[in-house]
Image (cartoon, rainbow, N blue to C red; front, side, top):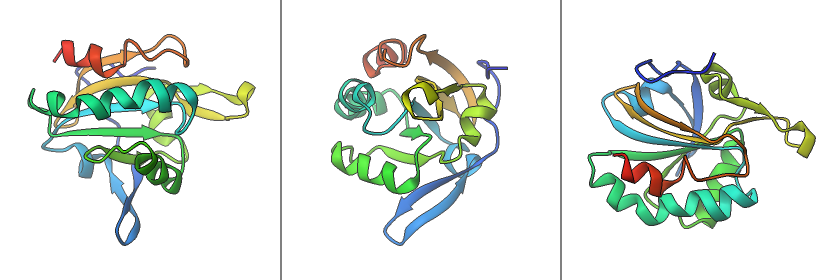
Length: 160
């Protein structure tokens, strides 16, 4: 079952890159006491994610944060090294990238997808959500992985 507005995010462990290397962080570590925009993509460096979805959040991060958002967090079912390389390649300073390397978070949310037809295995659906202190306040899920409109920064910003 897909997570609904008003529900708490599931407790999982992510990996994030730090100056000292990969570090484990829990859902509470990342979301408790914060207002967060969470952006999920099927895969780092994939065309729609890299060219159409992420750039909007990079370009609009100050406007989004001006609406009371503490952080913009980007997640994908990719390892922490890929997520770190993607953040650097995209010039996404100021955004936080977290690895859901095994897809535990995507599955717990009910937002995983089967990308095996493209050689991608299990991935996350494309979505954005606003999370306040670990509670989902809004959820914008795309109906197809190649679309980045409903979950895009411009649409999210209009609704903040």
